[in-house]
Length: 219
View 1 (cartoon, helix red, strand yellow):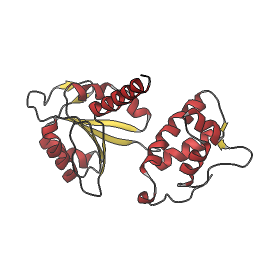
View 2: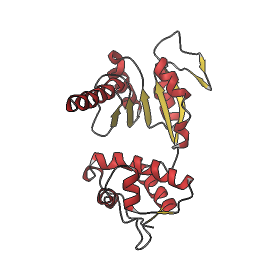
View 3: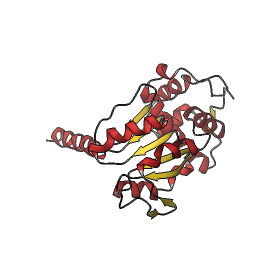
View 4: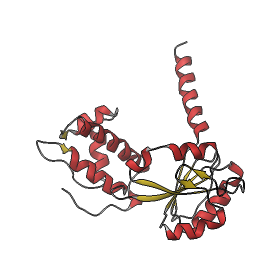
């Protein structure tokens, strides 16, 4: 199994990194069906990709295939987890205990993927101190100490748009190095901080565009 060092992040296209998560999900599905080996063609077809695309994506990170066999499913799962950093448990915190935040807390899939929710914060004094599931909602003033004590490097932002940048700034100052932003607004972070955004309205707009375009083409 290839143990070559990971490539420099700036040399790997973002779409290739995003596809790694899709590959991992599909490989885990194959494993549940007791598939032991898989070819690049079979993996690609299961995701609507070409075998050439699959091979190109994996080539950024090393050589994982075996002549005459293809990929060993279990080995490739381990390699992709290593590349993504999910071969270990990450402590994650949530800022924002509103409707969206509570829904995210109720999601049980995070820990299965290596992400453990460990703390919840909110700026609303009426929420602070109240319990939601296993969590006691903490005040924002407790954030820096909790980040250091629990070695938290990833955080989810689920606050109103007007507060998102301020929350991001507090998280970065406290030492968090990866932010997942659910607030419907663009925020800025230093170059050494990773930022991903999930804007549900934008996703729906993209869907409506695709459906509208399809409808127009059929006229």
